[in-house]
Length: 349
Ligand code: FAD
Ligand code: NAP
Image 1: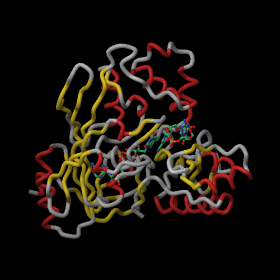
Image 2 (image 1 turned 90 degrees about the vertical axis):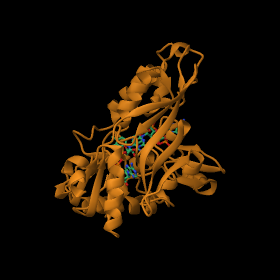
Image 3 (image 1 turned 120 degrees about the horizontal axis):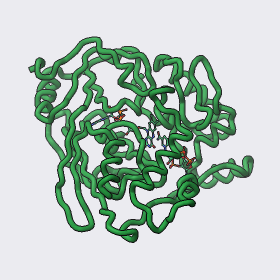
């Protein structure tokens, strides 16, 4: 049975995480076909209490030097149409499909819904975990359901969008189902672009609006939005292949109106957006920039020079160093603004 899973020992993971943290998995295997899921679940049942880490594209995690137990790389591929009308198409994707390739495939086919999420690294299977979002669009906007196995009993479950409890960079998979569920498939519903009136693209974010100002806004197609997002992101975000990073390292903090007003009084140029329940979302990048962290290098780790929210690891330091640096940043921001920045990638340290 283990032969079918090809379990390796002391497997190097530096090339499998976008922060390029040097790390080894005690044991490692890849799931490339759905028929391997029962083999994996059987293996886990026989090895009760074995620490387990599922790996997609490794773009939203921080690894320790030695990862105990079994690391399972999810590499399943495939998509199939569940239903189709003149105006909508519903497609089920295997968890190992690449997210950005899926966006490019959808826009090429004139399917609308995820064009604003172009160039987000990682896998389809990880997308529901933090309800990936960018430029005013979130996965939950087109997610129909998520399928996977409950790890404690090997039961295959289908969770409706509602059951996923999606919220801002959040879902049930970070709470009740954290480390208890493996996502095997994600189903998305797309609107078909049939004419310029068929879809209202989300173009409110200032950078996107500005980029598209030159275009004929009445004749936009999904490919135009994806191209704009790609160009904007390439102009300010470091490519992990060149400068190791995990995207935004801290979540934008949501604060009450009292805290917002207090900070705004002290810093009138504060960048913040009203959200539900009379709360405000503060731009964490602005807080970091104001506090002088933009471009600041400390022992081989830095917040990026063009986007203060992106922690970079140019010297490929180990995960422990990254966490120590992040704690310095958190303490400084808490002292200056009274706001705790929460780390966005999942830390296994
Ligand atoms: P991994 O890093 O491999 O895994 C992340 C977590 O999910 C881990 O805890 C892992 O165990 C778990 N996991 C992964 N797959 C499964 C599965 N199938 N079942 C159960 N658990 C699983 N995020 C945004 O929201 N918006 C952005 O705009 C954005 N931009 C980014 C830009 C850059 C340059 C980078 C490096 C990252 C960015 N991210 C962004 C973060 C990241 O790309 C997303 O969170 C992405 O969904 C992570 O996918 P992954 O496959 O790499 O997950
Ligand atoms: P930006 O456009 O410079 O905006 C700065 C911040 O202001 C963002 O964090 C964004 O919040 C918020 N914002 C801007 N316009 C807004 C509006 N009209 N309504 C509500 N909030 C608004 O941000 P950026 O750093 O260049 O990133 C662009 C987009 O890509 C953002 O949506 C960002 O979340 C996403 N991104 C995410 C990651 C990641 O790893 N999570 C990495 C890179 C980029 P939101 O972040 O809530 O959108």
